[in-house]
Length: 521
Image 1: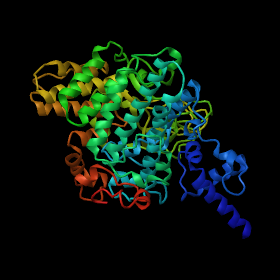
Image 2: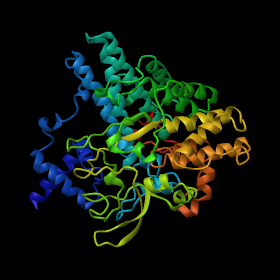
Image 3: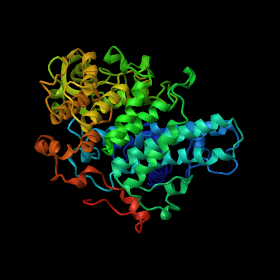
Image 4: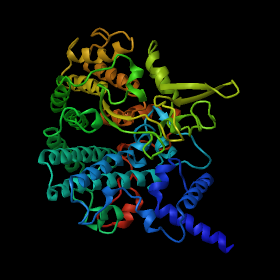
């Protein structure tokens, strides 16, 4: 019995002290799932943990998390810190599990329930607990990334190095910080605006100085960061540095931010700059946009970079989205059945839109016995993993098709023009997949064009983390989801309060004087 208690103590120590590595290596980890204990035991055996978290184990943290005054001395140190900021995008609380906050709350996808684990289902049916672990992950790992960006910005001044390169590193960090805050403010609303290297905010030790800043203030900082970044970042990089933030990425994200704020002239002007740069274009074939062998092409404006090879940098999506209990029939090492396409999304593809539909989703698969199994699943990320959660697929944050559709939307909101430039932008997307062009006779008003753009975004950008935020941004989240409440199984009467999610309860417990809960939770 004593040995059992010792083992349980070790499990708890590993869970709390070392959860970052556990979640990185095992994206499906859940402390309530018996399978997860096997994961922890594997780590215990492999890392030789005894009592508590040893220093050697803690040193596995990225160098970018170092906070001593003696670390950042050289250009190489700053480069490593910036790499850590980019690497934060892979965290489960950022893009590793982005679909939980960006797609599951919408009408496009739903989670696969496993036993009594309903943490993702709470987002789908809107009965969120303030203690939901995915909320805590999104908050904590969002600030881990922001901290890393702040480190680059703060420490750069004291490092003797090429000034142009230093300015570029800072601009890249500001782009990443803006992206991370954009995702935070869209999920939580008001959030603490931390712009200095203050890791203790994340740890909760000195976070009492930080309350929640109004969303308008956060958006103001996002715009400042992106405006400064776009003036410094280059339009492209040598092949060896492909994937870094560019001036086009900063402009495109800034256009999306303005669109989210419904500042349509500003959005249109910035998106037009991206289009007019001549750097980007649509690929000829839709599936080629997502081929792992064809990454960082002319349609990719910014993507989270992944590299397979069992080095901790692989993409998890092929494994996360393949059907659960499918063995090796869909992907090697099996799938988890996350982010399943809804029947409603399947019906959203118009007749003839088979290229996008068949590449993006499937309604079944052939098992190892040759039988057809009916099962809806996401197949847009389909690189074959070396081991589970170790594929080559990048995650597209902004691509050129998104920019064209955003620009069309902004132009229409400024003023509908029958057969105008916005029609051409919309039809460029449709022509690529062999669909007939939309005409002013079919789309005769600003409202009908607005609906046409929303429809095109839904099927063009499916499973890329846009649908929920598109619904919120355009004011359609409540009417669309209320109309489908019984179909989805929504468990509450949706109000404006549901358009942002609750602050993790642990953050309120740490700082109850300054961190208050969102209304309705």
